[in-house]
Picture 1 (cartoon, helix red, strand yellow):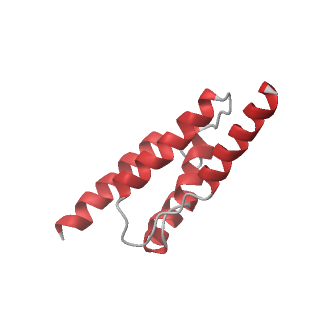
Picture 2: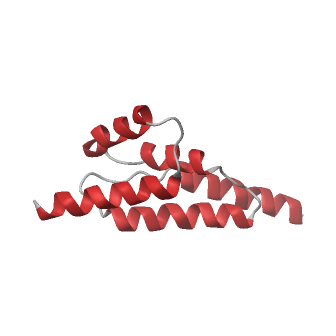
Length: 99
C-alpha cells in the first residue's frame, strides 16, 4: 500500500513538472519558483535531474517570446548549467524591463 502511494505521488509530481508551461507575459520569477518547487519535491522522492536536464526542461517551459534566448543557450554552449543559465535569463529579463 505504501509503495503504491509513493508511486502515485511520484507520478503526480512528474506530471506537474512536465505540464509546467509559462504563459506569454507571465512572471519569470514565479515560473522559476514553481519549477524549483517541483524539482525539489521530486528530489525528496529520490528523483534527481542533472543540472543540464534541469536547464533543458526549464528552457522548454518558457513561452515563445524567449525563443531567441532558448536558441542561444541550446546552440551556443557545449553543456548547460542550470544555475548559470538562470542567472543569464534573469539578467536578460532585467535589461528588457528597463527598456
